[in-house]
Length: 248
Image (cartoon, rainbow, N blue to C red; front, side):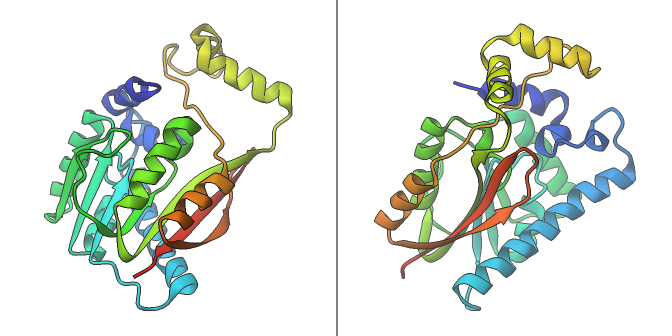
């Protein structure tokens, strides 16, 4: 469905770049220093999220359980596992999950588990004190993403928190946005771009989709959440971290 096959291809061929699209994280050229930077950035992000949640909603936020949607190779799962009693990673790519399990084993993380994703999160049965997703949802179309966000909110336990990053607007000119969308629906346009950028010809496009913040926050309020938004730097688009807490 949609880009799901693309993400399995990323998981099988270039998983670290697929998670965090910096050239230094390419599988064939990644150094030990770059790998350390990759995983250190995950810990820094989770610390920032917890700090922001406490600033917004109170110092009593100390999640004992967490879910990370779009967990990839475990960049955020490992620090979440070290800060909670249990964590579940959810990803559409079996190859990504396999790599995440290897990374957790290497990091001696034993309190993390993984499930494959679908739009309704039908394989996720529990509720969690923290439900999180970062640099993931923009790769999923708004129609599908809204369903996923509703399912993520439904997995938050009473008094628990939701922390998700989404794109809420473009900064590029309309003609530029049109050319970008062409790559999504007409693969030869993407192949040409890859050639011009000296990338593998058939490397999938990483789609970027904008979400309707008003609709999302309405869905959250209907589910008993209070929320705030915080700007998240993103070149060429308006990105936010959306933080929400469910009523106890």
